[in-house]
Length: 522
Image (cartoon, rainbow, N blue to C red; front, side):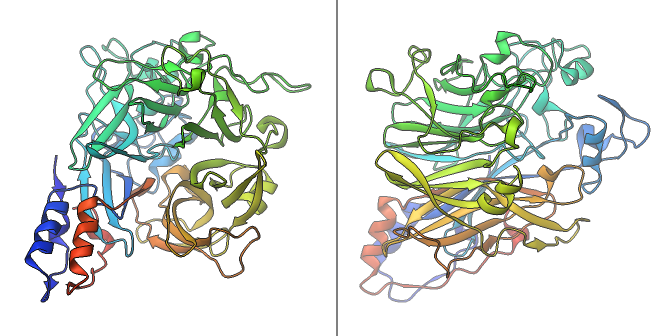
């Protein structure tokens, strides 16, 4: 584990700084990964190494046939036209960025033998930060090794994101059957990763999401993790997959565990003149947040169920646990869409959520649904709770939807279609600053692998109609082979506030130099 701290990039404190204030600053930030008043970002970098580096176009066999490309970043994703589950594992890096200018305060790349992500899986790496008695804890999900009898983990492996979980071997899973070889199974655990402020991290393997993606995790005040994801890339209807998906509750620790919450919840299982939804796919959730005693989550992709915002009841007035998971009930948040994705193509495709207060909810919309979604709802939606029912106030799209850009080293022009993960900060002047990762489209073989951006916007919190003077700006630029996943604002630590108070009497701070994007990951 290596943490590159702020000291390598920070400008010098100029004369007038008191010795006490300087001491507080050193204590607050030396060696920290999460520094406070910063934007923590999960990222991943593509590497043409290992198994993917061994691909030979028109020679190497992959699930579905013969590979049509080697591991070159611009063409490797064309292999998805042969292998519908094609994916490449990649290292997972956390960046802590100055919330004002995006300079890098710290970064850490996790050991790829312990945890990886799937580079082109755009729905992965959703990020949350929870304030605990021991400081901030960041949570997200990744793939971890299954142990003895299962493959070791590394960057550059193929189809891990669609492989089995060690909790169940699905003989209809094409990827696992193809790559099984001499292993017990080609299987990997979907695990919660928890990272403390100093960069130390733990993993908790779940029983869930076999055959598909783990998306996001949040640590609730009761000490339990709540996760969302998807399962079943095969054709089975086995309960071992269809009841280990969607919203799960997980107890932190080294023991593999998870329990699906409200496993009977199944929105619109059949339609007149429409085929039945695929088993387990109506619970294909991808964004999650905790706010004021409740869990909220989204579904915004796939042709099954309802793409909307959900919540879950609290049995006996408490968040669901493994013991009460079956008695909790999932429901659509009142006022949010109830159209079926299969029938309409989805009027909304919600992703990340951010509560500004109990009556104001911002929703990132990816813009991958029907024409209504792409034109009217893609971007950043602002919803207000009026007498228990949520109403869409407006959607922020200026300088975002339809914008195009090019990235050096990348062969395709990118067009922004919407937003994925989301975070925010309440400012002291009645405004709110929000940051989000973009979703894009291009001519590449898999748009999930496209270089995306982090954008920001300031909104008037009290506005109920679309302001005419608000537009997005780029907070951090796209770079070939880099994908931004989740974003989470880290509130200032008490020691940081102490430094500020001590320094107001004569503390001069030189400005931070904006880090070049190439230097962001050392």
